[in-house]
Amino acid sequence: MSTNQTEKDLERQIGIVLRIGVIIAVVVMILGFACYLINGAKTGYFHNHYPRQLAQIVNGSFHFQAGAIMMLGLFLLILTPVLRIVASIYAFTKVKDWRYVGITVAVFIILLVAMFIGQH
Image (cartoon, rainbow, N blue to C red; front, side, top):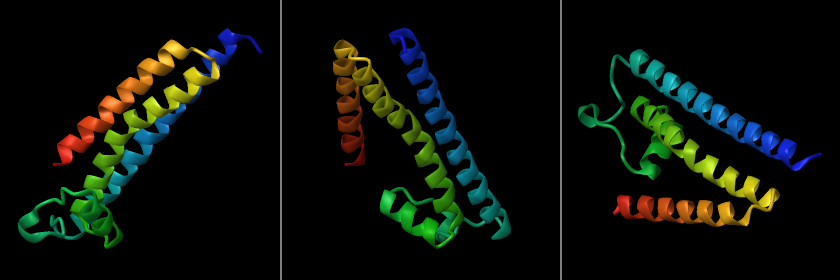
């Protein structure tokens, strides 16, 4: 298989990863919205607030709290481009394009640092 075909296959696989991530996020958000409507427009939290910390989101989702499920969907939607970066690192490594591996790893590190700074 030629390098050009390999690159096209990898791009197609990355596109599939993005589509699957978005579809899963949308399905989770729709389920959360359905729970919200079933519960009489209540998020399951005091004063209809939404959880903001990942542990609260996961815990609330297991307890079928509508606000937590909708926030989980948003979290998954935000996580989708991060997964694309990881898939890109793999793709560039597979085609041995070390310049882009380095650039993508740098972007990934910057993204991780920004996420950890944003939590505090």
